[in-house]
Length: 177
Image (tube, rainbow, N blue to C red):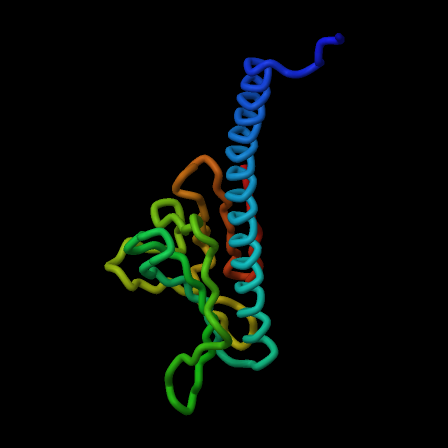
């Protein structure tokens, strides 16, 4: 009689261990990719919102502002962090700012860094920091200063994107190391 060609228990356990190791390594790599993708999405949304605020000011000929707001984030139990953006338009008849569309929230794990961002100030919770555009498209920020916003993932502070804002032209661009 011919002996059967089967795997031994040791060979089977070795293959399962290798598959487990490869799965663990791929999860770590996917987390890094996801964090980078979320950071890029937040940067792209911020650039788009700044551009949209300026465009609304130009087309409607009225004051428009982009605001980044410090809010409590229940998704990851962080009591405060600059995570929400809102466009607002000035209503002259009411002498108040009205929301222009829905606010946008950064993906989980992406926050704006108040220590590395000149557009943010260290204030009490609920602080709002804005870029206001006039009807001619220019901003009200000091043109001689450099204005920037740094977005990062608190789990990996070496992975960040800095958005630089030019107050004269109203243009913004991003830099990533």
